[in-house]
Amino acid sequence: MKIYSLIFALLLIFGGCADNSSYVKVVDSSIDRDIDIEDIKERVREDGLKEVQVMGENDTDEYMLLRYRVVWQDKDGFDVPSISSTWRDFPVHKNSNFTINIIAPNKEAQKYQLFINRQGE
Amino acid sequence: MKRSQIAAVVMAAAITLMTGCADKTERIDINNDEGAQVMGLDYRDFNQAAADAVQSMLKSGALDKKSGDRYVLAISRITNDTMQHIDTDQLIKKIRIELLRSGKVVVTTAVGMDGAEDKMAKEARKLREDAEFNQRTVQEEGQLIAPDMSLSGKIIQRNVKMDDGKQQVEYYFMLSLTEIKTGLAWWEGETVIGKRGSGKSVSW
Image (cartoon, rainbow over all chains, first blue to last red; front, top):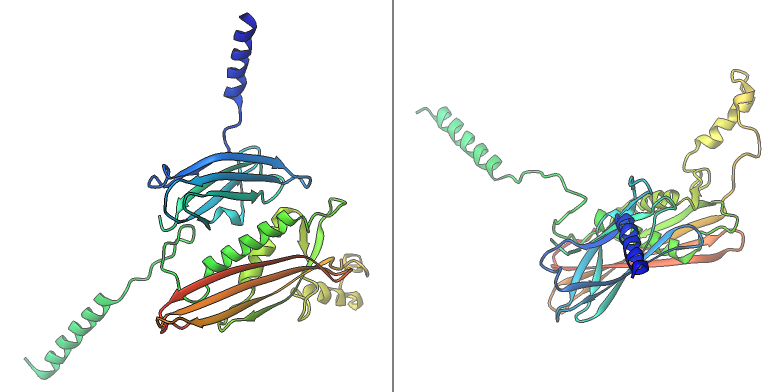
């Protein structure tokens, strides 16, 4: 019993220290129930650039033209300027999965905030 | 009321009416521009095309030099095959900036299709024969770096008349990245932007 308590405590401690400055957020409240973010995959490629893949699903019977933008930051939390910080359109078909695949602008860009919005909002 | 006074009053009223009706000039919020689309190309289209091209280039691995060094990139001919008077630098500059930031590429301004983009690299070498200049500060021969890669492309416009009288305009941004040593295109990309509007709209 003691060992389980210890593991649980360690998980809490390390979980609390985890880097949560990278995230994906649906910023438009009118679609946040319709769009599910199901998985986020990250990897550092051989060339040192971080690659992020966001997988989601459109739960509605409606095709949507959404847009996303990504703000990249270095390990110290300073913004890394990038063309991907401006909105880019992407299609989301009805009752279908969608994928957003992005690559960091350079090796310094390690943290990211990806925002999803509806066109024209 | 004299005739001249009446004329002055009418003129003042007309000026007030005209200025009152004039649309105010607004500055565009380029970070979140919700303005109506235009049939021609605007900065939003160039942003989209440039972002697509850079992401595609980085994903392809075509810019990954085995030694970890940077490739030297020359900008070749980017043909504007649209009906609009656009400077292709509106697209290419954004791509150059982002590629430079990536740390994978450095662009040479000493070589270009219509001569060097920055002629000073060559011009400053003419100082070799000028006794007024300290020759130790003049660049030695053989210092310029030749390009490894070349970026070329074309922007195409296609106008289609719809059955309902509307007009569809398709823009194709086509780019190629060629290794100069072998002449092989290591990366090619295309972004299509389509617009549909009134048949009376003019897209140039």
